Amino acid sequence: MTSPPPGHAQLPGPAQLPGHTQPAHAEPTGTQRGPAQLPGTQPVHAEPTGTQRGPAEPTGTQRGPAEPPGTQPEPTRTQPGPAQPPGTQPGTANPAVRVEQLVVRFGQVEAVTGVTFSAAPGEVVALLGRNGAGKSTTMRVLAGVAPPTSGQVNVAGHDLVDDPVAVKRVVGYCPDQGGLLPRATPWEHLQLAASLRRLDDWEPRAQSLLDRFELAGVADRITSGFSHGMMRRLSVVLAAFHRPTVLLLDEPFDGVDPLGVTATLSEIAAASGDGATVIVSTHLRELAAEAATRALVLRGGAGVAELPAARLRGEEGQRAYRELLD
Image (tube, rainbow, N blue to C red):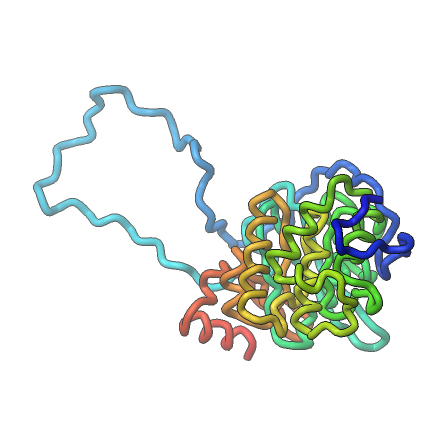
């Protein structure tokens, strides 16, 4: 284990973090087919650059006489359509996250009832809804912490039921609460994570994250005395630390001050820019619109709509969101 910088305490031994498995190198990502479109659902994204619509006409081909000035038709303006049913948004042939008809029951309580969505590499998807909508349960399943009752879940080419250990290797998970060792410092948490995941030359990355999330000044204080916002920031740092293939952030903005929100948004953008798939759960509509490219709205454990996150902005977005929840 690499010695910490001066002033940082040395962790006695690499105890296993709760919910973490022994690290190993991630298996190669397999190729998966994305979910089928619902009948009648039309893709709304632009065609790839360079797509040919047909052979070019020969030079000199006459299209007919030019129309008099002022008679040219105005270009058609595309109006945003209504939100699509969950699972019908155009995705990718090889999604990094694919969830189909996920059901999770705890005894007689059905916490998640048939959620379906996918997310591509480099995409940020928000799970948006009120408390009790099924967001955190869905995130726990994606992280390999809670087993699905039925349905199919594939993360970075690994089937969650067949190989949950492989799934845990490729994700970084910030739970909605807990996950920290109360008698360990932030630096010791990072030191332990580096040991478990066999990271080399990890100190510069650790120091950079602590600086950006304004935790460098408390890097040697045990976390039992931290405020709720400080613990949320540290949880995001630990989730993103090893640059996972899939970054799962469950309620990362809850109780966090504006500087912490800015740091979290910056890390989401950085992870996405590096090609990671980011799933963010939140009940905060405006932050979902700012953080994500696409949003899945959950209500009562089920997905009720899937739409571009930009449509959630402003007063119009607020009205649309309320209509989906009522």
